[in-house]
Picture (cartoon, rainbow, N blue to C red):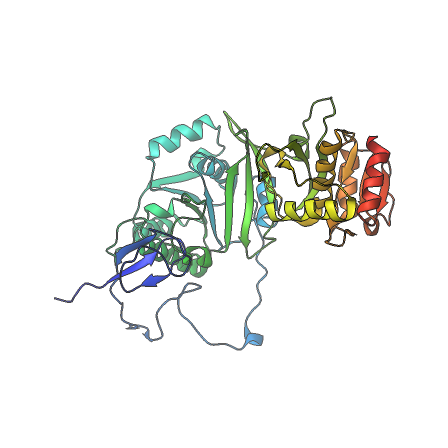
Length: 462
């Protein structure tokens, strides 16, 4: 009897080791290395001869000249949800494999069930469930008023081989697999959800998708660190990775792109979770700008660039006399290192000493700022709290702060200002390089350095 081979793989980064150890030496994570059985190696020589082994991207590998490869422009088809289409890159590419992950209860199954109802109008659709019974799916479809339920096929199955048989028999063109952590392949003796099972299952689905032109949307779970559960190979195999998360008030859902081979990898869209399913939010700026009519010190509005469109958000700051020897610097949704830099620039070039004060910065609505264009808004919000002078609600602020106190321009500045004008803003403090063109209905106050920005603040707030 052949000896069973075992390996040890980190569930976070996918690194493998010859024996178990407490900490992964590749990603420094603790207690993430799990044992699994190495699948038996399949012979590379079959009926098709040497080289007949299938790969991730197709059935049989064949060397061709790049100039001889036929270029196919595959027409995309709609998911039935316009905001989802925009995140996907103006639609779904036939034969692609997409991975949708998120927290439990975020609405992954709900969103996909609404989408498959629209796709089933002119395409054969199959919903594969490895977690819920077909009766639970039917009840949810009825509650969501899913259209074309008479055209949607559903099956409860966890075997990848059986799933692919069903897809072939039904001649399905659009398949949802919920979830990849429940799928298993017969030649792998590991338990469902193990790194090897997740990798082999995703690879088998991808091979079939690329060979037969079937579109797969795979649901994935996340671990306690909000990363995709399973090996890193899972992310490398799929064509797109999309994460669905909740905002701070749990009323809205944010769908963000982390990887997309057929579109931008920085898109995002917003949904409102209701009793009848996910509702599209066409104007997300209105969500994050729902402020009271009374002005408060320490609040400033800025605009972020999310994928292909601007998004207006509110930044709040609070300065308070510290009662401890080491003042606190706490941020929510903003980089703490950039906050420290802004405080240092404000002290060195603005003459505002905050070394004895606790400073808190918060991005309203659970938005996480990852670009530098919000630096000026954060700095003026801190200055507003320090002076106890509110910034009027009709003032927009954006720009990057340099260590020498210069204000650097932001990309797509005119589009940001135009979006602010649509939302009722009448004034904007922006870098001089972004003020080259006028926008109807809004007064542009151009600044080049910190001193000019503080002067502009006094002009609008004092």
